[in-house]
Length: 545
Image (cartoon, rainbow, N blue to C red; front, side, top):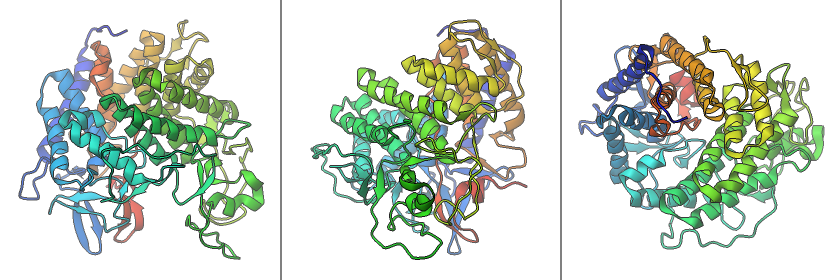
């Protein structure tokens, strides 16, 4: 299916929109505040006036440049150069990474970026005192291919440093989303640690959330892929398998984490239950009396954790597993099994949503919290979580990589309920895809491209074109891709231009020309004047007129 299709005026219009967006960012988004004219980008600007986005803390303003929050944009620049032949886009991306490797790195190779660290473009100094001042990854999924193109040695050091900073105890892979800068790094033998092959849910000092686990597995897989580092992938495979080991033995559901926080302080006698991990497993503390032993953080299968576990980690692991040949087979099979379990036990076709559950299959729909704690206030009701196009794409990718028929069955059900149409029982059969749509969902466009690869049905591509046209019509404003024309700030790390390029590359018979869209969710998290501890998406990116 890597053959070119006739390019229409509408196809050219979509590509022109992406080119216009990139040109606008190159014009107004590169450093013009430090006096040094560095190649760094601000994270975004005001739509009116093109003023830089700022973080306000302790009566100071900092101009936010966080390379970890610009990785979809970096991929967009690379893809645009590949499709247009204009090197200036990728050159701009390479220059930003080069500057980080030269100037914004600790002694071990760890970059100054992530959830609790950014660079102030007024001073070119790292800023982290507004929160934990640590290296944090939570589904950031950097473009390591770009980093490798810029400097293989620096990338190798960085990837090793990422693991070194986040792993607390290699014998059991106790690890945490926060990693300290400046830790001693055994560069000669970075992977030669003892391994005890532990059981799941050991008591650890860290929080083995899958959002950091997903990033570490990707980092190890990319080091294996780019540098033929088999030892790195040994640890990446071990880490991914810990989540498999922590899935519930009866259902295969889970796992959001594979360890339990070690209880270092006694629980108070009265509510609310404490929210800090030093008091032990927060789910057990809040729900143990209500639900028994199944109440543990790793077995929470409701809310945003479903997206993190099955869409963000799932999609990313399917991608890196597919890049590793035989070495990736175990990761592909385990990820496919987790997706199949989610569909089998949690999908409610009537609601087109996933039931809120404990990993043993306990349906929590309509039930309420008995106690106040980490997950919310007493009386809070559990609700189903929408089965959107991100889940559809994960199921299709899972089928594409493993031919697990359970995942195709899931994809058929979700495609129908998403209004995409009726998919045949056989992926090579006759499908009834509705080509016209008013959807402007970039995840649906990505899912349709995956469906096209699996089925070869041109109707999937026609519908993808329709989604792409609607994206440009509804989300392209003033040279930026915005959630609405009323949004105050333009975030450069938009998904829309990247998936539009993926569509264009497919139409031109060059799908590999554009970097893969990995569903990252980078965010800056910390104290912001007037808002307490919050996220940039709440105080900056959601602002409307």
